[in-house]
Length: 132
Image 1 (cartoon, rainbow, N blue to C red):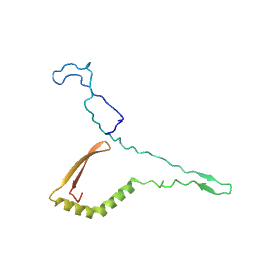
Image 2: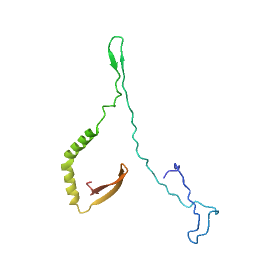
Image 3: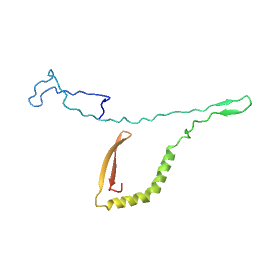
Image 4: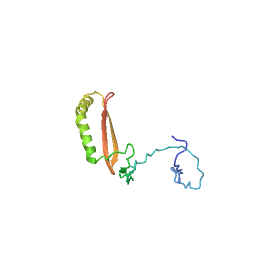
């Protein structure tokens, strides 16, 4: 818990949970505290770099350089290709782990929900004390 939360919401009972009597004008005393932590969605920040050229009096044209680390754009097709290559290279290891987890006497599992483009998807994992 944090000592100074970003938002505080005070929740006062308006009526008695036992008899239903109106409690709206009765003084309240703080009973307990709970905090939740909300992680905001990640938002991509796009920065466009534009390079320009200038002519020199010597007749040479000079073009500015992109900053270090600003490379050519990566296409969706390039990412798809890399993921497929990784999948092919890791397939034998994946199958070995899958077989060893399945033959274990004790298996732990987890199901985690995640939203992708606003749609709910599920991610399942199975693990032993040595493998996931």
